[in-house]
Image (tube, rainbow, N blue to C red; front, side):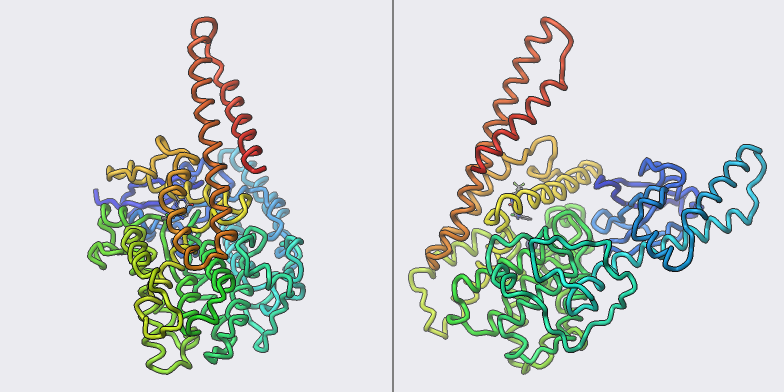
Length: 539
Ligand code: BYE
Ligand code: ZN
């Protein structure tokens, strides 16, 4: 029988399904329902890697692990779906009554064991369709309707201490931007945006879009390169759309890397040292550097012989792709922020962006760092002919920005590490499922958070950050010092975990002599001990 393979994730867990080519829609839905352990009335939503909602139908395209679908379950109790209810009520549609009536009808029918009348199926279909439409609108309304300059009546950007209230947003705001955008962002936020202590978790995506515009504005790019605000907004929205909904390499990561780059430019006063076209290259490279990342690294792409590995002959498949997607966006006139540049300027910026994005491939780390070390003693910003020197510095700066989470406050950095490990473990699971070599630091059975991070900080982060601080001594306090603190924190956590392991082993040995094992007590002890360690290290 001809079959197709569908890869999808559910609750962050990768799954692989094999189905007949002509699998009926109902069977397909049942399969997804059981994979999600969903109840009969729960709603299943299937997303493609772009984050678009797609139909669960017999025509569902087979895919491969690097273009996994994502399955989500929405509990059938629609009163908890505040956004949906708000919209439904506003539309004069009593959603919950309708659904309750349907459930009642269905129960009656089931009790009488007669065939469900077609009209009930029809009504169910309509309710499902309507709910689907609501949910598709939610992502768009999150982006378009909240912030200043994006059709919003209330600005959250004036005060970063107030988390935005998502329930007050105007769901009907059209994705139309004000053309005379004045970015209503307070001076306080503008200054905060220049520091590594900026907390990305406090801001919604729509606000992040505005903050990105602020960066282009405050670096004078709008005026210097004649970038129309609408074009910048189009560009940023295309970028936003082409980051996937995955645990780590998502739009928020794009923002963090860009914001760190922005901070580095200000902290080192780079504006007075290098050409503004190079600064524009650096900021835009950061914005674009992980476009359309699917959550599986180059090793996976190559081992699984994905389309990307094939296309790029196993040579930095991901980074080549990120850069190609960036130029796909820039090829369109309405989102080409470089459209008013001269041909020469465009050529230079294109070359720079490609080099910067390709430099984020960590297999090139030693090569780039060694090059930087050799040019450091002869570094001279006044010598404008040192094109080679400047591009190496640009590569170092994007690399630093890309892996700089640990230079941020612990409350910001630690959730990022959890996201990264989640993405890595997903890949490890997929590699096991597919019989591919399991990348050592992605094996959830072998890697712990502190053990991986202490090694990474000691051997990758510190040597890189210290070299950059040799050139810019002011960075010592801003990025080297916090990374040292993070190393202490994870070293303490590692020790605590080690102690727990020993305690548990001892406890088990003594318990097995006396009474049956009490694993709950041991795991409680572990949690308490890790919490205690976190507190001491954070002080
Ligand atoms: C790197 C390469 C690809 C993707 F498991 C992300 F120990 C990263 F290796 N980044 N970015 C930040 C990191 C960090 N890798 C690690 N720690 C980071 O803080 C180490 C990893 C958890 C592991 Cl380098
Ligand atoms: Zn990145």
